[in-house]
Length: 285
Ligand code: ATP
Ligand code: MG
Image (spheres, rainbow, N blue to C red):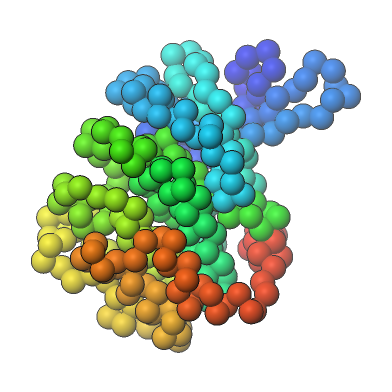
């Protein structure tokens, strides 16, 4: 393991993205009788992203069971290190790929629980006047207790913030109104939830290649479950309707994340209890 400083040790890579990389870390107190603290550090090389660091402050005021905890930021060898809660059961991206590798699909009851947690996280952020802006499978994290949390609010802004136009991210999850550069609000998140849940359900990204989609999004019909191959899975009408509501191209008729919590596919499944901890431990056992 690599010592970042006297107390913080990098004990293994958790993955890398476009902007940086994430490691599992330990704080080893000088007193060996004290417990080690485990957390995750996201490292960003210095550069234009520096400006976004200020925005990370908003993470400090987030305190929700649906948002990964943010502990603080420090510099190390010129890089920016963001310390956060370690989630020990990987992201939705890895979870659905694992299920797919076994020739299976995520059960609708599991999907609706994942969708509910994402929507509750977004509802919380909305109450704080924060847009997440980067909902996608790799930013939905699990732990072995069955908790499901949103991470990477680093590129989020306050709803009335002004830095929006400086950010160009992965576009495949962006709502049409964002791609066309219009003003956008909380309903853009609903679109990203729809793409994320559809991707987890079918085991692959449902939209055309990034560039093709960006060039043609105004001509393409949004993906609907009814248009997709059925993959041998019988999706319920309620699930299809949930996806169709999320993927309304017209932002004015697309519900907000908070409204989507009232959708029958989310509400009615509440009568069927589910043990997400047991589910996720089975996935990774
Ligand atoms: P992008 O850079 O486009 O946002 P990304 O989300 O895949 O893509 P990162 O945010 O750098 O890239 O994350 C890399 C990987 O690290 C993720 O796939 C995720 O599985 C893992 N990861 C991120 N944060 C944590 C965390 N707090 N605990 C555990 N694993 C994490
Ligand atoms: Mg990420």
